[in-house]
Amino acid sequence: MTVLDTRTLNRATLARQLLLDRAARPALDAVRHLGGLQAQEPQEPFVGLFSRLRDFDPAELSDLVTGRRAVRTHLMRRTVHLVTADDALAWRSRHDAMLRQKVLGVYRAELAAVDLDELAAAGRAVLADGEPRSMSELAGAVAGRWPDAGTRPLGEMLVTALVPMVQLPPRGLWRTRAGVRNLPLADWLGRAPDPLSDDAADPVGQALVRRYLAAYGPAASADLRAWCGVAGLPAAVAAVRDELVSFRDERGRVLLDLPDAPRPDADTPAPVRFLPAFDNAILGYHDRGRIIDDAHKGLSVAGERVVLVDGRVAATWNVEPATGTVVVRPLSGLTPSERKEVAEEGSAMASFLSDRECDAVRVDAR
Image 1 (tube, helix red, strand yellow):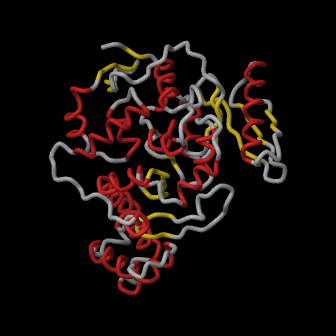
Image 2 (image 1 turned 90 degrees about the vertical axis):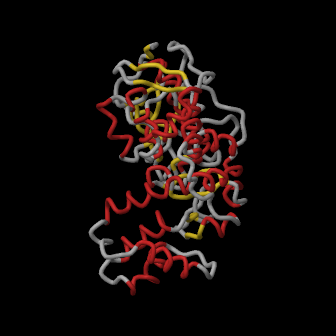
């Protein structure tokens, strides 16, 4: 097997993630290609698409949400993702067992005496009036039947796992602050999620494998699991195995990929890119060494926005609320040309986030 070194894998990731060249494609196509955008912080998908799409207009993404073509829902890894409506309907049932186990992993003791089927039925009965509710409102409405469980565990289980939900706009719209109001996915989109297939070859899992490799490959099975959180995909991988090509990384892991997917040369120039918090370009792998050094990997789960320089995490960034200035804090020394490119991209980000009211940027010393 051909061995792909870390830099080659880095360039493949950048190409698949639309971070090597900004793509001229509609926002809906980008959301679909990426398998969704991490969205627990409501404004971060806009940042992610600005860094990936040419001439991105944030109103386009807001319109997808209000027009019910994209939804905010719990999916991969039990985190809130912005995904296309079609993917939410196709994928949700395949994630149900994982979502339930993730919640039980936190609240197993509190929910030990709760029949989850009865809890789901009680939650659906409350929601039958069609009124959106916060998690605490929904939990409070059923808590009388399970007073010892606590409202937080009941609410987390209902909203995250038992009843497929959508977080309704105005939450998640451009430059808008709003609390979470939940409505069943079936009510918002007009039909229920596709039922779980009883086909042993796992057709939905096969689709997940292909889609993951298109946006993240070449990658190992462990990377696939890290992205979606679903452990039971061996049958799906086996079913599509003959369609794929194989490589090894420098650790000896077997990497799978789509045969015609882009794998740029390791020396391909990589522009500076500003990534949002919890971006899947980093979190979508078990082995994140292709894009972030081990010394900094904690940043990827701490909600830090990061800057890619030559394709790797080289700085963190945020915005000063009072001034709108983008502030960059390098993790190591930057060359003069790198600092210039970081400043230029940071200025563009400041202008984007402020609707062109501010383009100020400050690149701190290391």
